Structure formats: C-alpha cells, structure tokens
Image (tube, rainbow over all chains, first blue to last red; front, side, top):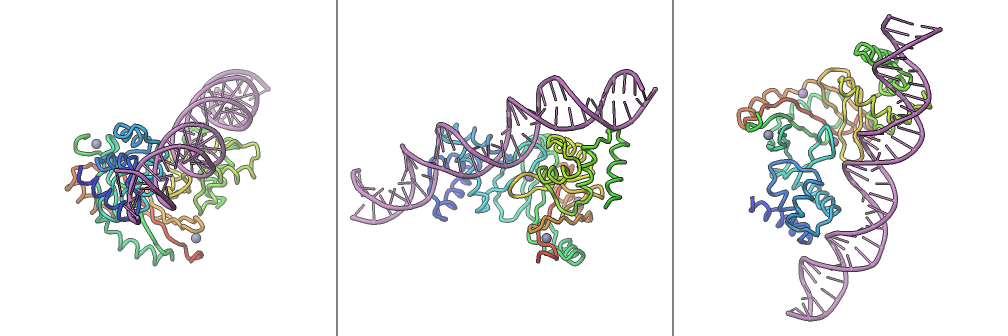
Length: 140
Length: 140
DNA sequence: CTCTAATTGAAAATTATCTTCAATACAGTC
DNA sequence: GACTGTATTGAAGATAATTTTCAATTAGAG
Ligand SMILES: [Mn+2]
Ligand SMILES: [Mn+2]
Ligand SMILES: [Zn+2]
Ligand SMILES: [Zn+2]
C-alpha cells in the first residue's frame, strides 16, 4: 500500500505535524501493515529505510498516530503492546494468533448490549473495545 | 466476600497447588475485589496481611490464577495491566474509568457477528475479548 | 515427625517505556 | 535559494514493569 503511506502523511501534515524523515520511515512500515507490530519490530523495519532512526521516535510517532486515530493498539497476552494501521474510524480487530495478521471490522452491533447493561448496572458506557483472536485462512 | 476467598483456596487446592501463606494473602485481597488492581497494588494490600510477602510471588500467583480462569486481566490505556476476580467462566468487564470498579457480565451476544466474520474473512475465531469503559453510578 | 518437592523472596537481569537536553531539520518567509 | 524560529530528533540515562536465578523455607503426604 504505497498509497496508504501518502494518506497517513497527508493526515499528519494537515494537523500541523512536520513530515520528517524519521516519521516517514515509521509511516511507511505501518502502511504496509496487515500485521500488528510492536515498537521494537517497527523500529527494526523502519531502520531499513532510515538507519539513523531512534527507537524513541518510534514511540513518539506511535503516540501521535494513536491520538489521531490512524493506528490502533493491539493487546496481547504476552509481551508488549502492538500497533496496527486502522483505516476506518472506530473499529475492532480480528487477530491471527499464528502470524499476527489483522483483519479490521467495524460492525460490532453492541448497541443493544450497552443499553441493557446501562439499565442493569447504572454505568454510563463511554467507550468499548473488542478484539477477536483466531487463525487466518493461510495459517489454518 | 470472605466466602469467595475460600472458593479460591479450594480451587487451588483441588488443582494440586500448595496453599501457602503468601498465596493466601494474595487471594484474600483479590477476593475483596470489586476493583481492578495492578500487581503493585495487590502487593501493597497483601503485605498488610502477610508482611514478608515478595512482589515476585504476587506475579507468580496472578499467573496461576489467570491460567485457571479465576481472575482476568484488565487492559488499560496507560500503566501496567490490572487484574480482577472473575466469578463466571468466560466473561467481560465494564470498568469504571474513575474509580476502577469492575462489573462483570457474560451475555455478550456476539455469536452472530462471529458467524458473519468467519464467512467474510475465512478466519477461525477461537476466542474474543470485550471490555467496556465508562463511569459507575457513584462516580457520575 | 520426617521427608521431599513445590514454593518463596532477595537480588540481579531483562524488557518496556519515558525524560532530558543539546543538536538538527522542517516549513515557512524573504 | 538562503534565513530563521520552532518542532523534532536521538543518545544517554532514568524509571517502570516483569522475569530469572538460586539458596532457604515450608506445605502436606506418608
Ligand atoms: Mn493490554
Ligand atoms: Mn463473550
Ligand atoms: Zn495467520
Ligand atoms: Zn466509579
């Protein structure tokens, strides 16, 4: 997805962030992403593009991108958090346990569940967060 | 919930784990739990019961309890992971952003969503994982 | 009460993430 | 294209979170 990199870049520029070489390298890696990657993995791949890159910059860039909603954090049972490109606004992930490939989807149909829970518990539900784990067609 | 502590203890004993004083202290803290707590918080509270307790033992005990399914990990945006007593088998959490109180629920009605996704993506969905964030009645 | 394997905790090692700060590079402006 | 002020960078070191190691201790079976 060479195009997606440009979308990411444009989005950053629009919001007044400078489009630096280190950031471009990180964006390029994320734009490829059908898989979730943790900061160290992103760092390694991005250094192939821009060798002077520092790991700190990866963390900082990820933070900005999550903030803006261009990528999403993926929670796993072991190790650190991963990140994946998120094309739609609010969405969820279907993560392959084997190879890490991520399929995004946004129709989660939880409205009804929320309504009932709010009635039953008195909680005001502000956000939610759904992740499915499985095996992709290739890994089966 | 003094009773719940006994349930936890029984469950561990049944599975052949020794019921040591350090473990009992951790269980006692978790059995109270309407709130999620991270390892450091659990450690602090459990030391009030058994001062010689080591933080390592908290980590090890949590690992066992998650494995068995007696507690569940709670993922948060910042800081480390938290844990909460989980009474029903497979279930989900409604977490109060303000005070950390957790309401457990298990009727999540996602079967239909799964079926459609499996058809559409070819993934075999093996497990899932839903967390709602909001504000509890008290904190509103 | 004895014995042994499971468990513990102190310490040190790793891993994950954040802060600091001087040097640098982007994105205008001329 | 050179000039400039500000955002951004990366090295280094600090902190936070978690795991490993290992000798000492203890639960619980017999
Ligand atoms: Mn998490
Ligand atoms: Mn469910
Ligand atoms: Zn796969
Ligand atoms: Zn609350």
